[in-house]
Image (tube, rainbow, N blue to C red; front, side):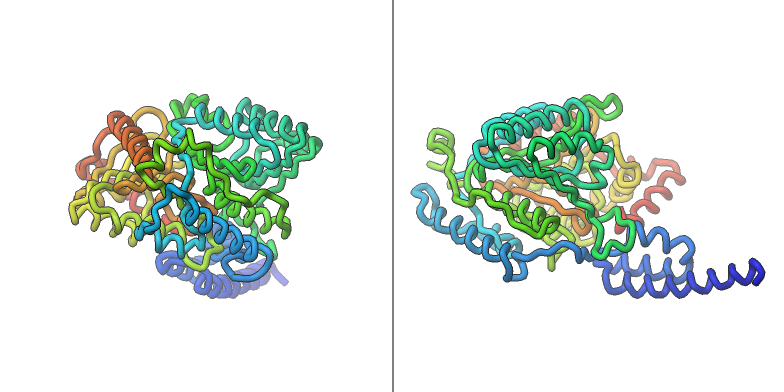
Length: 487
């Protein structure tokens, strides 16, 4: 057979495979925009679309067993017991008010976790404060440390983190670590071997669908979690790497925010980590699950007047509903006076964009801080395409000038949301994320002061900032916006 005959056969097989994958996209893609884009591309230009689909395609993650959401199995039993223990703790706490915050009630149902009381929440501003808090928390550990990071680097920050984990293991603390296979792809084997030699269980989250039939860079484990003794938890935007400490000359000074929780809410964070561990090992480790209250000296100044609430929102592509997007849209819809947002990646879908527009139109003070610089050019370009749609509706867009801003924080009236999720499709539908929502006057005041300080270092965006750009730049921005479903 001549070469043209082989080429014809390959062409026919490619067309057939394109139709097969188009059917897969039709059944698995979560957005109509993404489904239509993939189906058209796979049918019309399969030679280009098929390789891209193997890398980016698919939206439903079937390898992750969300056992507690399905109401059966070991995780379901553990989650039910924890939920009841947290509710009982709320009922018996002398400082807790009996009425619920109805704004949080739908989110409680969404994640099947109750709000907790008697927590202490402290904002950790920037990487140095975060790393110090992480190391100190690990050094306080008596029985268990569980941790999970998207990025762990073998640099000075990574070495300090490793040393703290090994020291904890050497004094008898049981230490377990999850790292993302893609985000931590450059982590040397020697680094992991040192951890394992010290008795630390270190596991990789691959993100591959099961069976692992294709390369898959989606479905990343994007959480940054440390839980110590089931009593204190840290979560937020800071990974383990020197750039988060402001040591990258291209992105410095790095602006980020993390959260330190002490109290019963740490168990909700631990449960989210436990789900991730179960998805990798199919086992549930022995961990403390009794709610613990901080010393009264740490909480009396707030609980006596504020009746704080903390709700932990784990989210990911294995959820039956799109938890992350629903969480953000709920906050945007219930805002009455103020909606201040800081996000490094501003690529909202249509529903989220409409929620922001409507909030501004009904008189809410809507402000969105995004970075002037970038570490991902495609999402940076996408943000420009939203200038007119937001600013003309009354949303104030502000570009943070010094260095790179990576924090993920939302101030919705008196509710403060801090976590790992960005305002983009990847966080809404492709990544495993975690967010803490806190109702606390003290935390509200701290977050407001933090936002006000950041805004003083911003430039306000006007529609002309986009309209005056070169036409070719505007075309690139529109193309980047069209690619939002795979960003």
